[in-house]
Image 1 (cartoon, rainbow, N blue to C red):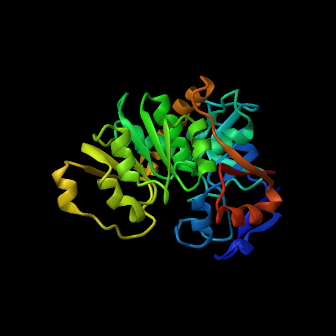
Image 2 (image 1 turned 60 degrees about the horizontal axis):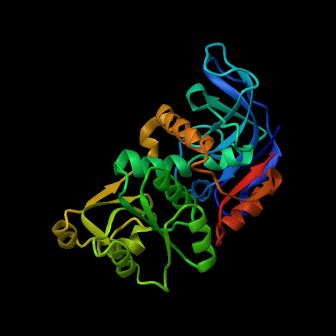
Length: 323
């Protein structure tokens, strides 16, 4: 079969489209014929060795995907050959999804919502479970709360906008330009603020009648944390999904004076079964028409290098590879 692998760490040029042996499932594994695999920033971090993993090169990259079950191990009972499934969480201690076939643990195989294409189902992995984990598991979002999503045009941000709205929140998103602002409104945001043009804390307070946001989903805490503390209501929660930097400047006195809860997270702490359970819940929301993954561009698997190059620049929606 064909796969995209790295034999050493480095830039996009280290991605090699090559022949590898087709795997066979163990007793508790599922072999999936991959129809689509999404490209994520974590794939770049692994490629550059900024996110060390147990599986060392040569290795196939890719966390997420969707496809059709080709073969199951003797102990597998929850899926059968021919099932359409989606999955997340490969490529850390195992081979990844940038391939014509991928091996999953049985717990990772989640039924694909019939209304989603394989490309959309692949784009649901990682970003939607991450956003759900931030909003629901870490921050306990309640209906009618105001949620500020920083970086609302990004993968996690656009998922958070849709999920927060589906769960009954009033949603404000920040973006980098007016084109993305309109796109984020179309995803369900009640308001979209253009950073650099709008005074975000002042606008959030104006939009909330001086109260502030109840919850902030923060994807660039090193840049935004100070502004976040000026944007929140008393007792608010700030969920740090991405720091952008190993160190964060924190005005402890200001945070304490407002009873602000600063929450850190990793959706990986939910474990394989936990992430799969979250994906099932999100799949139900997708089937009900309440959320939908945003696919930006689709590339042949052989053009994974080009997708990685594009990922480094500004883009809207998920980048997807198709074998």
